[in-house]
Length: 116
Image 1 (cartoon, rainbow, N blue to C red):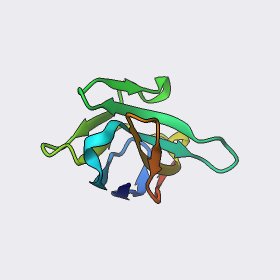
Image 2: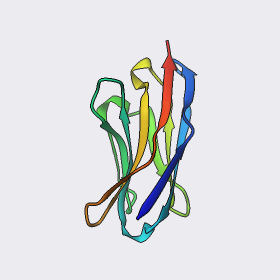
Image 3: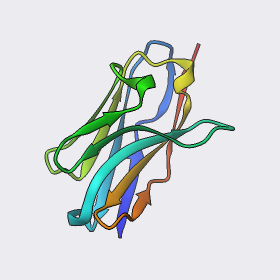
Image 4: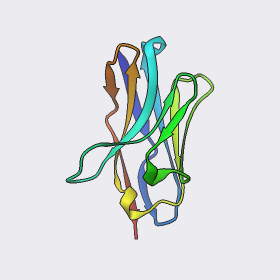
């Protein structure tokens, strides 16, 4: 089992920045990939960014150049630095971890609201 707790969401103006944090605990040794997803009202949940245990990253086209995913030194914390935020970035953001066996775990989500 893996437990994920997100923090760092909030309200920000267009062009502003936020940093989301995800603290993981539990069976960390089996985690292969950690990532951030988001879901806006009436839309499907979508991948925002992901980072593998080896440090390889992947981003949605819509956030490339603006968002950066990284891991803490202990590798039990994942961050999402979000710059140049736009109203379209408004959504609930969820931390995700996927084990080597394909099991997915989710955090409870944190709301990001970008005002125009």
